Image 1 (cartoon, helix red, strand yellow):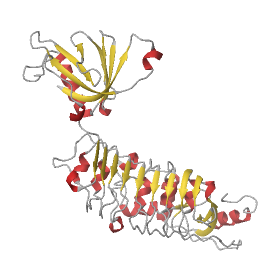
Image 2: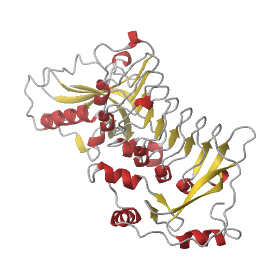
Image 3: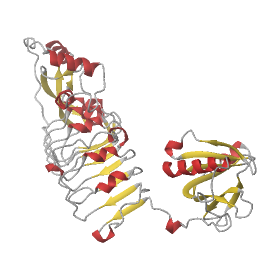
Length: 419
């Protein structure tokens, strides 16, 4: 049996500092073989630098096998002689099958039919024959007739006028980067959120303005997706499901038809790069003040540069909240998670629509709303604006009570809400 993997060979006879220096994994072939005459089992390691292979005896020669991270496709095999440690990084399924066969070989329970690989004729897999990790499709003739290799980690399908997402993509459990830009895709199946390792998704220059269900922005993607590009899709609104992408680092909403952003944008604590240029935005939600960005681009929008200052007036108390709003405030105040499936979708949408007062309470149905100017440099290190535009934009501020509203304006000259 042979598996293609990445291996680093550690030498226990060397000092720790010297052994750790220059630690680098190499694309290799690891074979489990049987000598045709003696019947002894052995392991042979092939690399591009050592095509003849390094042979390791198995019987009474394996010190231990470390399999704590085997579900991630990683393990370590330590030999008695020579004092080598093989740090293996491979496909989890293939690695488990290899280790299972190795265990049976150590117990001498393998029949002649199970292991036919001879230690004399075995050779390493050539680099050109190794399964690819990256595939780029720029024309229809490039499309694989036998389906996508299961080893793919990066897939680019660009400019071939596809109208949908190939269902074969949902079987690529190792996929990290998916680029479907410059096509004619209108909807994305929910099954996309089953991909466990997807970190970057580029769906720019498509027709997602026709998308009615955004449930694919959930599942495994809520914990894995770091980069999302939705630019050039003629979007008229931002899907609320984006607020559940807890690991999102980069969000690109450029060149759409957005008139406002969702309140949940402030929940993206890991967001560092936010682009929403060439839209129709007039204000930002108040909770953007909680963001700490490296870069923000809001150029070419409809922001009003001069917001009139409101005077403090003696307003009447707000109406009493409903039981529904009280319950929603308690859930949001306690930061109780509510993943899809735990509550009716109408209740989840209700909680996602919440804004927040300066005191930290959620504002759902009854609140006071006003606008203030926000200096973009207070939430981002680098700011991009249109020529002639100032560095501040209006944001909507929400107050849960007249008390919070009054105290905010009375202290405004000495201690402004937004700096």
